[in-house]
Length: 305
Image (cartoon, rainbow, N blue to C red; front, side, top):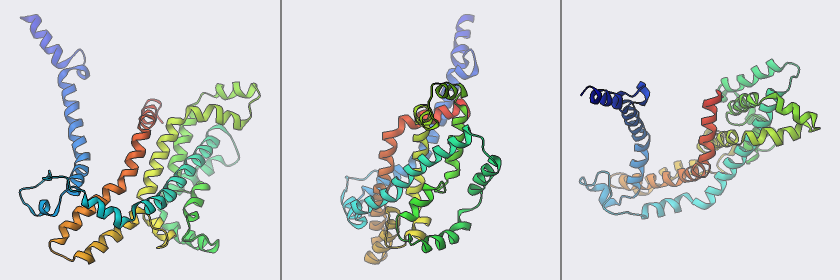
C-alpha cells in the first residue's frame, strides 16, 4: 500500500516538480488557452468569410456556416484586383525585406568583428535611430525624396533599406551583431591564417552559421513591411497601392455601394474574405520557412541572443 502511494505521488509530482503529470497537465492547459486566444480572431474571421447573407441574417447560425459560400472571396478578389495589387505589395515588401536583411547582416558583422574609431558613438547613434519616433524624421525624408525625384516610386521604400535605415533596421542590426559576437574568434583566425580574406570569412563562415538568424530577421522584416501603411501612403501616394491600402478603399466602396442596413452584413463578410486574402501570402511564407524560423528562435534562447 505504501509503495502504491509512492508510485501515485511520483506519477503526479515526479522526481522533480517539472516532470510530474500535474505540471505537464498545467503546461498543456495554459498552452491550449493561450493558443485559443491567439487563434480565435482568425477562426472568427474564417467563419464570417464563408457565410452567405442568409447565414449572416439567421440568428440560429452563429459560428459555423450552413454551407461554404465562396462568392465572398470572388467579390473580394475582384474588388482588390488581387493579382495586380499582390505584385505591387510583394515589390514594396519582399525586395526591401531582402535588402534590409542583407544590409543588417553586413553592418552587424562589422560592429561585432572589427574595431574602428568612434565605434561606441556609432553604436549609440544606431540605437537612437530606433528610440527616436519615426514620425520625427518623416518630413525631412519627404523633402529629401522629393528633391531627388523618387516620391511616388518604389525607390522611396528601397533606398532607406539599402543604407541601413529601413523599417526597424536598428533591431535587426543588433540581432546580427549579438549573433556574430557568439561566433568563436578562433574560426576567423584559422581562416585568416589559411589566407582567407575578410569577405571570404564572412561568406564562408559567418553566413552559413547565421542562416536561421537570416530567416528570423527576414520574416520579421517581411511582416513589418507588409503590414505597414503609414510610410507607404506618405511616400508612394495614390499611384502605388498595396493590398493593405486597397483594403481601406475596399471598405469605402462597399459602404457607398450597399449603403446601410442589411448591406452592412454583406460588407462585413466580404471584408473578412478580403482580410483572409491579404494575410494569405504571409502565412505561405511562414509555413515555407517555419523550420529555420523556429531554429533561429531556439538558438537565440540557448545562446542568449
